[in-house]
Amino acid sequence: MLGPKGRNVIIEQSFGGPKITKDGVTVAKLIMLKDKFENLGAHVIQDIAQKMNKIAGDGTTTATVLACAIYAKGVKNVTAGCNPMDLCRGLQATVDRVVEFLSVNTKKVTTTAEVAQVATISANGDTHIGNLIAQAMEKVGKEGVITIKEGRMVEDEIEIIEGMHFDHGFIRPYFITDVKAQKVEFEKLFIHLVE
Image 1 (spheres, rainbow, N blue to C red):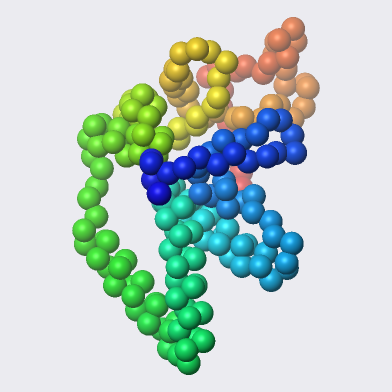
Image 2 (cartoon, one colour; image 1 turned 180 degrees about the vertical axis):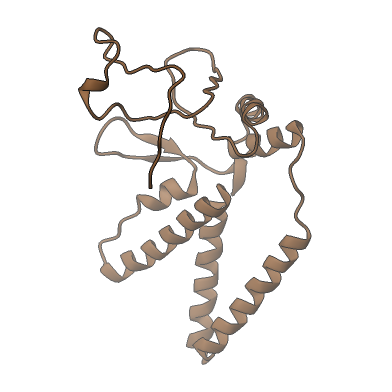
């Protein structure tokens, strides 16, 4: 099954406890096969899942299943005598028609309720998380960045950081303004960025 009704997978990790997920790209990243040619095919599927994740942010499992089905049918047709280049051209023509159909029938998500619906699906059917993401989207806007972190609190919370926030610390210890807390905090700071 795909989507929010999909099955969970337990992944053993070399560090920490096992990871439980049903995210297609996470599962695909961890597949390693002993045979180098089979592993090459697995890497192609991993690239497909990662590209789908980068473009759409979701649908990685669907993309993986479609890629496997297209490959299986392609091998079957080539084995039956079909010209691989004709098959490739036909596949590209089909992709173009599907993309055209999707671009015509695309529905933009505009309301907070619609954002909550999409977020709930991405959160594996968890409406609470979907509503939190919708609230965060409403506050930061379409161009804002939302980062989700696992916290130590019992309650889920939304923290809005206005302006720019750097995840990494200071480069030089000379920038420390609070020696006791080892923090660098400036107010009304001018920053000159050069590329």
